[in-house]
Amino acid sequence: MKSARKLVLALMLALFVAGVGAADVTITYWQYFYESKVNLVDELIKNFEAANPGIKVEQVTFPYESFNQKVAASIPAGEGPDVITLFYGWLPMYVKAGYLQELPKTDFNKAYFDKTFYPFVAESVDFGGKYYSAPTAVRTLALIWNKKLFKEAGLDPNVAPKTLEELVSYAHKLSKYDAQDNLVQAGLAMQPTGQGHPWIREVLFRQFGNVPYSTDYRKVSYADSKGAEALKWYTDLTVGKNKVGYPNFATDDVTAFKAGKAAMNIDGSFRIATLNAVKDLEWGVAELPTYKGIKSNYASYWTHGIVSGVSGKKLDASIKFLKYLTSPEVQELWLQKVGELPATPALSEKFKNDPVVLPFLKGLAYAKASLYIDEAGQRQVLCDAVDEVTLKNVDPLQALKNAQAKEQKLIDDFWK
Image (cartoon, rainbow, N blue to C red; front, side, top):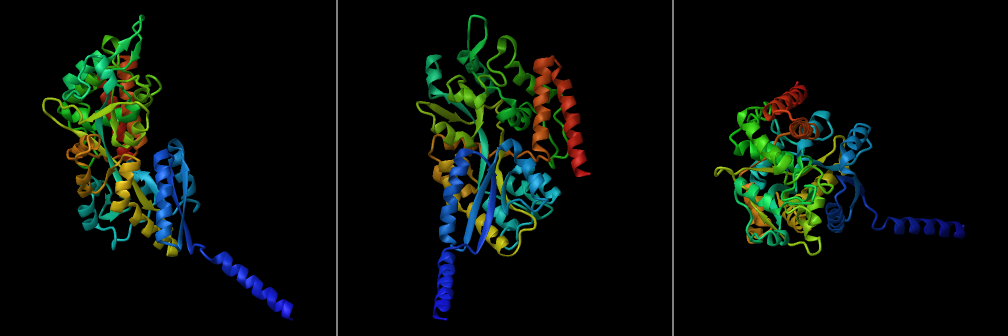
C-alpha cells in the first residue's frame, strides 16, 4: 500500500516537474526565408516568450517563391500558422480568399492606423473600414552607388547623380566593355524583375507626366505617349550602343552590385543590412534622381495578420504577439538588423542624421504604394512589356497597350 502511494506521489511529482515552464499555449508564425529577418525573429521570439511565460512561439519559414502556394494549400485545410507575414500587395488576395481574420477593433482601429503609421499604410490595409494586418517596417527606393568604381571613373565618390540626365551620363562613364563590346561592368543595374518594375511603375511613369492608375488602382492608364516615353527611356539603356546594364547581368542586380560588377543600382532600404555585411564594399545612398524637377518614389512593406479560425487562447496569444511585432522597440531593431524603415513616422527622427538611412526616409515623404491585387501577375505584365521592347523590338506604346490590357483584365476579374 505504501509502495503504491509512493509510486502515485512519484508520478505526480514527475508530472509537476515536467509541467514547470511548459507553455499554456503555442502559436506558430510563418514568414518567407530572408536570413536577416529569420535571425531577428528568432531573437524577438526569445524576448517575447521571456515577457510572456505562458506563450510559446514557433517560427516556420518557406522560400519566397513557394510561400503563397504553401499558404493556399495549408490555411484552408486548417494546417497553417496562427500569425503570418505577407507582402502588402497580397492583402486583397488573402482577404478575398478568407485566409485572414479581421483584427480586433479595440486594438487595431482607424484611429490607431492613422496615428501610428504612414498614410499609405492606412490606405492600403483598409478594406471597407476593416483591418486585417499591421506592419513592423516599411520600405522605399533609393539610388545606391559604389564609391570605389566612381573613383576609378574619375567621378567624385561622394556625389551621386541628381537627375535622370545625370544618371545616364554617369552610367555611360561607369560602364566597361571587353574587346568584343560585351558589357563587363554595368554602369547601372537594370533588373525589372527586382526593383526595376516599381521604379518604372510608380516613379518613371509619374516623372514623365503619366498617371499610371486611377486613385483606387482599379483603372490602368499607363499606355499613353508619356508612359511610352518613360518605358523607352528605360529600355534604351539596356540595348545597343547605349547598353549600360541589362536584366540578369552577372546573375542579377544585387549580386552584381555586391561583387563590384555594377556601379549603381536602384534598390530598397531592405538591402541595407545585406550590403553592410559585404566586406570592403564602399557604398553610398541618395534619393532617386528627379526628372524636370519631379520627385517620385515607391513604398512597400511586409505586414502581419492573424489567420482565420484562430480563437480562444491562441487568438489572445496571437494578438499579443502581433502587438509586440509592431511595437516601437521592434521597429527600431528591425531597422538595425534588417534595414527596413520604421513604419511609425515619429521613430524616423532618431535616424535623420544617418547618411545611409536618411535618403530612404526622405523618399517616404512622396512615395506611392501601388495597390496590387496580384503582385506577381502585375509585376510579370510590366516585365513582359520590357522584354517585348528589348527582345522583340515592339514599339514602347504598343508594348504598354498590351500590358495595360492584360493588367486591366487581372484587376477586373479580381473585383467581379
